[in-house]
Length: 154
Image (cartoon, rainbow, N blue to C red; front, top):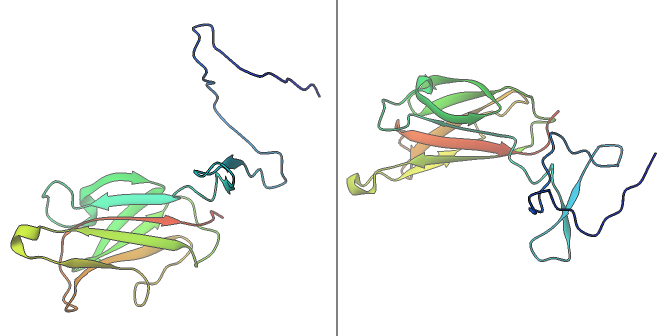
């Protein structure tokens, strides 16, 4: 194996960028560390990325999983009931303890105050989760939502 050591890499045009298709770390897991924002600590590139996101009911379309907007690692979405969407993942998570977020979009002019719910009756599995929009008084309501997860892929 050869080792290439350089102080600065410049393309023929003078730009200091490298175009590649794949990066892999040298550890057994292929993990890559990058210098964090403060400049002294490092963080894992793989663990710092979102593993899935989706949006649905966008652009004032009627609520429902069939009105999907932007998605990543989302195989499908289904409207289970009022304000409940089941999101199915293209690539499974490594366990059921991943962290999820859900962000209902509401119209402040109408006084709607929707709050996200994941967990409880909205069980997370390694291949899917449920996203729910509810008002602070517990009432549920159809609205546009965005959701996603962070954690380890299988």
